[in-house]
Length: 220
Image (cartoon, rainbow, N blue to C red):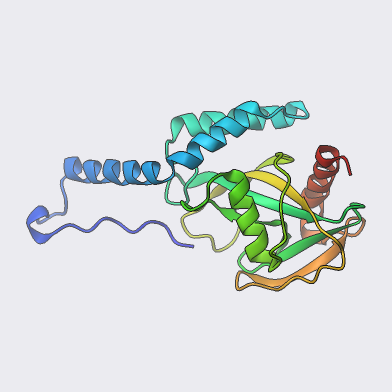
């Protein structure tokens, strides 16, 4: 992942010492408007979903409030090309008995996680983005998250993530039979089922909390 490249100017627009501060500010404003416009439907959906969501505890309520404040400050706050911290959507795939979860060994992070990533302009909603990510990264076309947020998670990124410095993740979950065979995508080193009683060491604390939140939200 890389950050947005600077907007190029024609030679007649440049001074010997580079673009003027006024012109550079106008370019930056135009870029933000373009990004905000392209992602306006997702910004509106995220705002609607978070306003309607009943957080299960005080910590999650603080995050819900922080997410909404972020969206109010940043009209492009759901886009990778927006602020360096932005909303993402993810999907935990779990078995009906909550005994196993399907995880991806992320190529860049070098850790095991649920499926997820950046929102795209072609996504109709946060739920649609989580669905797309779940299907793309698992290789299972039947992954269908329930239309309910199971957890919010704000985290800084460690690894080769270019422009991105933090994600405000909105997490959903999908139920899938343990016999389903996944397919590893280019974004992953591996995709595999893990017992919820023996989650990967590096991300065990985070994933255990997500499994617990999923079980409560979906009644598993």
